Length: 265
Ligand code: KIV
Image (cartoon, rainbow, N blue to C red; front, top):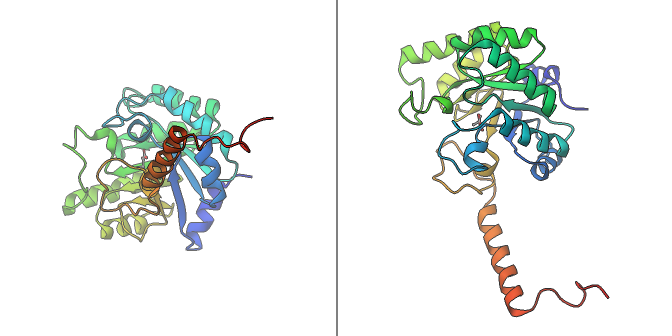
């Protein structure tokens, strides 16, 4: 049985931290489940780490559904959230409701995540009313990279911090069961968590939120780009993979692979 929204709220209320990680395929979904991670995000960061793009902007609803289906085949217990990609909800709420329903219906995930504060409140109300649980996402919102002139820490000025606290309250009132807060000063991460009752899941928002999320490839040391300050690398799998493949290539060249025991008779 998968974790539920009520389980996540209970953890937050009990002061038990919530772990979340992005995942895009069945192999890693199995490993993430085996590690006992509470929540999985099929992030539109798949545009970066799976598709090799510079931004998340080109990711489509079909891309999200494809990767979400792969993830759902690999795990049963984590609570699974899928991103609503850029372009699927900005033009009007009807598009957004249809896209949200499609993602839940076709991929079988448990909730969707939407980037944006006050401006998304009406859409979030409609999705929640339609039975689509919504996670909010404020602070650094990568779908707005062009409008924000790049990827920067958000909420440093007092007025911006106040706006983010106001956004978080509006998202909770609209029915979000949880809110991702990305790249804000740690004091603001705490201020936002203190302002709402639902679990805030931080990424670069300090240690005082109810939970943390990281991009899987960053946490495992599989990333190719520069490491952000907030990322902790729990392994150096990139180097492990290169070393293993070099040994494989050398064994093939020398004839050491396959051996007689690895051959059929
Ligand atoms: O797409 C993503 O991976 C995300 C996380 C960075 C929170 O939204």
